[in-house]
Length: 188
Image (tube, rainbow, N blue to C red; front, side):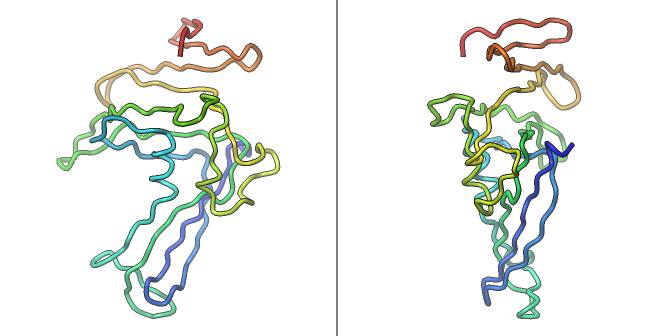
């Protein structure tokens, strides 16, 4: 389990006095929200929305600042504090509607982005709270390779079928796993 253990850092900063409260929380997988009303999105867009965005806490959502001893507007941010050697990334493919129903999010996620090397070398450094976020066992510069993808086939969260595409660690080829059937993935 240690190879999946990382740490998030959440910070709340008072917009009045600048005081910041920081807390850390362990994770064993990273969950990122996939937007519903978008034509397509890149993996880097998803990671940036989750780990580079700043949420404003205002009005009824104000935060109690210890230094001001009052409810104040604040800025909330979540960063990757310590990254594990292996990251399990969960793309949230199901979302609740305002009426409480669960719907499948079908927005295509482009994994390749701008990286010329394809699924190799996804750079997490821009989402880290510091350059010291890397564990001794992880790759330098916070680079990770995508080696497997789990796919859901079905209309919603209550029915469907899961398959997986995995890259072989010896021959480097991608294989599709569907119950008891395994085959080489051809093309991209």
